[in-house]
Image (cartoon, rainbow, N blue to C red; front, top):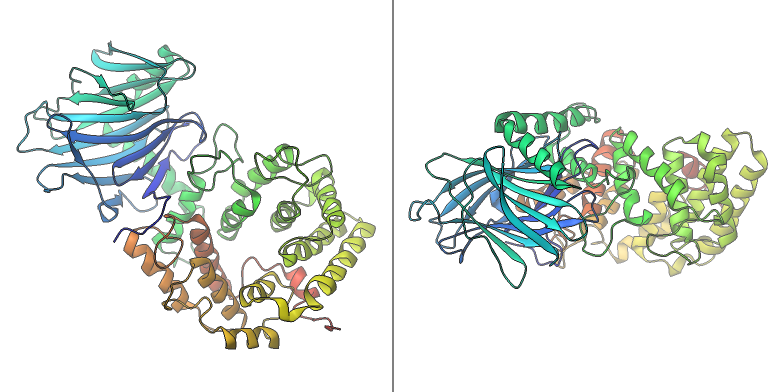
Length: 527
C-alpha cells in the first residue's frame, strides 16, 4: 500500500565522493529529479520510459525498487505497463569519475517493434536549444540551456527520430534497442558543450560492469568505516546513513538538504542536527565536522547567533544557535570555542531562552564545558548560572504545564531525571505515547523518544526497534508515521540510527553527560 503523503521518494543516489556532482531521485515513474552541479539545480524533473507511440507509460512501485547490493546507493527498478506485459529493468547510478548519470536498461517488449521504446524527459525550463549530433561515432542529443549547463543524452544503441518537445516541456526520444540484451544510457553535464561531450564519451567508453563496480565499491568502503555495532548493524542502519551522506552538497561541502523539497536549497540546523548526530553516533565524524565549519563560516551572524537559511535580516534564532553549540560539544570542537562558539553562547545568554527550554539549558551547560576546557572559567560560570536560572524559571516553576512529550524530551536532554514522579504521572494519563501499534498510529520520532526514555529506566527497547524496522520492510524506507506520511522521513531514519546505537551503548547516545550530571542525576528542588 502506498502511504498517503505529499513528498514521496523511493530513494536517491550519487557517487560517494565530492568530484561527481550529479544526483538522482527515485519515484514510481522510474526516475524523479536529476541534479547538477548542486542540489539546488534540478536539470530534469522526471525520466520515464514509454512504449508504442509514447502513450503507454511504464511505471514502478515501491516494492519493485531495490538496492543492487547492500551498502550501496545503486538501485534497480522493474518498470511495467498496467497490463504487466511490457517490462523494462533499469539500474541507476552516477559515474564516480565524471559528471554523468548512467542507466543500464534491459527491455522486454515482446509485443513492440524495436523502435517502440521512448525516453521521456521533463525539462526544468523552456530555454533549451537542442540538436542531434555525433559523438565518438554515436548519435547523441545535445541540450544547451540559455543560461546554464549543457546536457548530452547518448546511448550504446542508436537514438531514433523524430525527437519531440511538448508544450508541457516533455522531451520524447525514440530508442532502438535492437536485439541487444541491454544498453547503457547516459545523461552527461558540463558548463560547455565540449566538456559535456567529453564526460559522455568517457562514461560510454567504460564498460557497464566496471562503472557499477566502481560506484558500489566507493559506497561499501564508506560503510566499512562506520561503527558496525559489533557486527550487529542491520542494512537499514547503513542505508539511512548513506541517504544522509548523499544529501551533502558537493559544490559547498558541509551544506546539506534535509530531503528534496522543491523550495529550499539548504536546511535549518534544527532539521539537520538529528542527521549530524546520527553520523556522530555511528562513528563518522568527518561529515558533521564539515557541516559545523560550514555553519560557522556561512550562517553565523554579527551578534554571534545563527539563522535558518533564507532569513537574512531577521534576529538570530536561539534554537538554531543552541543546536550548533551542542553539535560543537559532541564533536569536541574545543579549538573552535574562540572561533565562534563563545560568541554563539554569549548570544544565547542574551536571548533569554529557547523554545523548547531544555534545548537552551543543555546548550549552555555544553558551552560551559567547552569554555572550561579552554581555561575560560568566567564564561563557564556565567553559562552555568544562566542555565540554572532558566531551569528554575522555565521548567521547575510550572511543572504541570508540560505535556507528556515535553517531559520525555526533558529526560532525553538530561534536565529532568527519568524517574521523576511528574513523568510517571503523565505517562499514566497518556500510556499510549510513543507505543507502536496504537489506534491512531505514532510518529516514528515519538516511538524513538519513548524508547530512549525506557532505556534510561534500564528496560529492553528491542520491541520499539522491531516496530520501526517492520515499517521499513513494508515500504523499503521509513515513513513519517506508522500510517504513512513523508517518505522517506529523514528524522525517522536519524532517530532509528540513534536508537540502535543507544541500545548498543545501553544509554541514550545523544544525552550529554555534563548536562545529566548537573540536573538529572542531582535534581534541584522545585521550589
